[in-house]
Length: 93
Image 1 (spheres, rainbow, N blue to C red):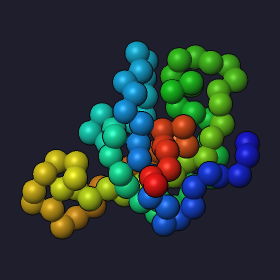
Image 2: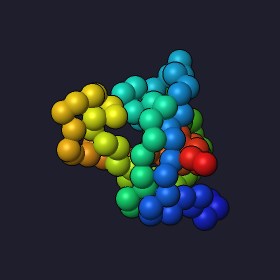
Image 3: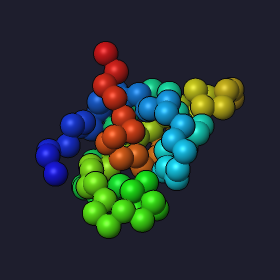
Image 4: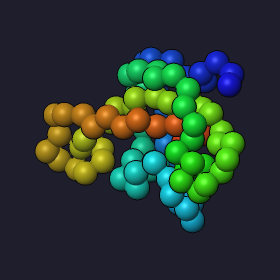
């Protein structure tokens, strides 16, 4: 596995793809902008494991936080944190 693409403090946007198979990217977080708060090492991609791949991709996993109001509307004032694999994320410019 290459070095993690993102670092703590980076702003990222989640993918909007709705794959026809299992994914650990929750629907409520798709297309949302969040902030990386932790890099949790590299782990086999859960999507690949659920599909029975014998050699799943290994990717960096990040703890990303999102303002709760951005996900579900007001009232806000708190955060939701989600563990996300690198392939679910893109750079926010």
